[in-house]
Every structure is written in C-alpha cells, then in structure tokens.
Amino acid sequence: MKKKILSLLILFIFAATNLSAFATPVLEGGVEKTDKIRKDLESELFTGSVETLERSDIIHMTVSQVLDTSVNIEGDEFFAEVVNDVKGDKGVIIPKGSFAHGRIAQTTEAKRLGRAATLSLDFDYIITPDGREIPIEGKMSTKLNPVANVAKIAAQDVGYTAVGGAVGGLLALNWLGIEAAIASHGYTLAGGAAIGGAIGLGTALIRKGKDVLIAPGDEIKVKINTSVSLPVYKDTALLQHEMLYPGLDIKITNVKHQKDPFGEANTITLTVMISNLSDKTVSGLDSALVNDYNAVFRPSIFGDTKLMFKQIAPGEKYLGDISYSVDNMGRKFWLAFYDRRSKKAITKISVDNAYKHVSDKVKRKNDRVRTQKSKYKKEADLFEEFD
Image (tube, rainbow, N blue to C red; front, side, top):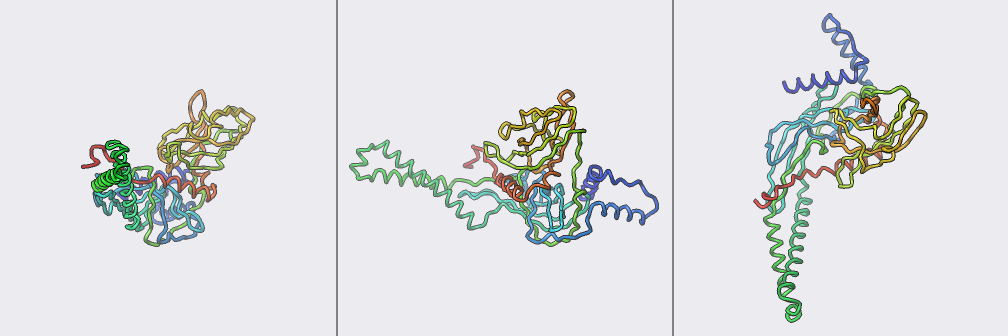
C-alpha cells in the first residue's frame, strides 16, 4: 500500500511540473482509450531505445532520514533519492529525483580497540518520477575491507602509543631532571618512555569506535547486483520548469561543487553569462539559489564574489562566477533573481538543466567533492567516550 501511494504521488508531481504542456482531456470509453493515453505519455517521455542497468553499476543517492547505528535496527525501512542521472550509451535510464526503497540489512555496534560500528543497506526497487517501479537488488555498506580496517586501527593505536611514549619521556625529564638522565646514561628517559607507552597502549585498548550516522545530504554509493533493461528518456522529458523575464537572458555555463574554508562540501559555484536587454538592473546581491523545497540560499562571502557586487544595467553584458552555500548539494536548484522593490522573483533558471551540458571532467570532480564529505561517523558524547 505504501509503495502504491508513493508511486501515485510521484506520478502526480511529475505530471504537474513536467508534462503540463502535454495535458490530455479526460476520455471516456474503456481500456482502448486508457491504453492510448498511456502510449501517448510514453511517446512523450521515451526515445524508444532500451538500455541495460548493468550488474556492478553504481548509483549515487542520499537518504531521506537519519540512519544511526545507535538508534536504528535491522529491518527498518527508509527511502533514498537518486542525486545523479544514471545513463546508458543512448541516454538517461534512471533520472535524478527517483526514489529507492531500502531496508537496514545489518548493524554492528561500536567496539573497543577503536572498531567502528557498521551499517549495511539493501535496496529492492526504485520509483521514477513518472511513477514506474523498477525492481533492483542493490547494496551499500560502511564496513571497511578487513585488511584495510585492521591497518587503520593499528595505525591509530601506534599513534596513541607513540604519543604516550613522548609524554612519558618528557615527564621523566621534568621530574628527575637532566642530571639524573645523564648520570643514568639516559635510562630514566627510556623508563619514562616505557611507562608512557604503556599508558598510551592502555588508552588504545579502552578506546571505543564511533557509531555510524548517515544523514540527508550525505551521499552514498549503491552497488547494483542485477541487470535490468530500461527505456531511455528523451532530454525534453527531464527538463525542469523555468521562469523567464523579457529581455533578461541568463545562461549557466558551468556548475562546480566545492568545499568552504572550513572543509565542508556545501558550496555551489556557477559561471553565469548575463545579457540584460530588460528594464531592470540586476546584481548578484539580488540573486539566490532556490531548491525544490523552496529553501533560499543567498550568495556566499566565502566563494567568488565578483558578480555579487556587480551592477548589470539595461544594455550591459556580464560573464562571471558566483558562489552559494547550501545545505544539500544533491537537491534540484534554480538560480533566481529578485525585483528590488517587490522582492519577488522575476526569473528562475534551472541549474539541473544547465548541468546536463557541463563537461564530464567537471562532473567527476563534483562527485569526488561530494563523496569525500561522507565519512558516516557519529561524534560521540564526551561523557560516553569511555563507557
């Protein structure tokens, strides 16, 4: 029942936002006319070609709710949203914005010796924006390769022991003095280092690993374990709606995902070309990024600020970059410019439409920036660290 309701809701939203131009009057007369409507809709959506979602393909997603190993249990259901178009040789077969149904397959608790908790996820179907349900078998896990995991823990514990040794030697020097160190031919320092090393090793033994937390905005990579044949979408079927203002021509020529000065992957930098033949003067301060939840993000002072303070009067042109800090780079966005008096948006240009023409090299860099953010570690409470 839950699947049917979600499918109908997504189909309604997709039809309302993307297919208003193809609206068909209600027909009466049975199955034949219903089939005709369905075929007409399919002809508007698909090219007629078929591609295969291959085994071992990777789909980038972000979860719709927090998944926490200290709270969630095996069997819990959740939904994840596809954040990149999945393409075959002939075009898109699973569009960005599709939803995947998942369950928590396995959880393990954080343990001593620095062993982190793990979370394994299974996915069984995807619902596309046009309401199709695609059966898949997909998996994702935060568990490291056993060899890599042991090496990581060993490296951390060596660090604890080495620091303990250095501190122990320093304490011996402070307590017994440099004269005692010389008289004993350095044995006091060695003894202090040994004591410090033991303290460090003890810390490593009682140190507990961190719980895993995957939050909306964290990007996960889901590996597909089945092959599925899927129709190829037409480019026109996947275009987002835009609002234009007469004479104000705005084109987004590049989209870069970046980190802010604090290392957080939350900045979208747009290269924008503006030709202003309208009756309005615009600037970057009049702009914002608006996502599909209608959240508004103003220009960031940590990114490129040239366009932010540039006034583009009627008859002028401009090409430059402008940056915005957002809460989730995987959402759909529109670049909006606002009227200074009424404060209402006069134009909205789809970032997702522009992203289809961004070079593959830039897209790969963007993917790396977003996925570097996802370490899935929950910061432990200070008072729970040694529980």
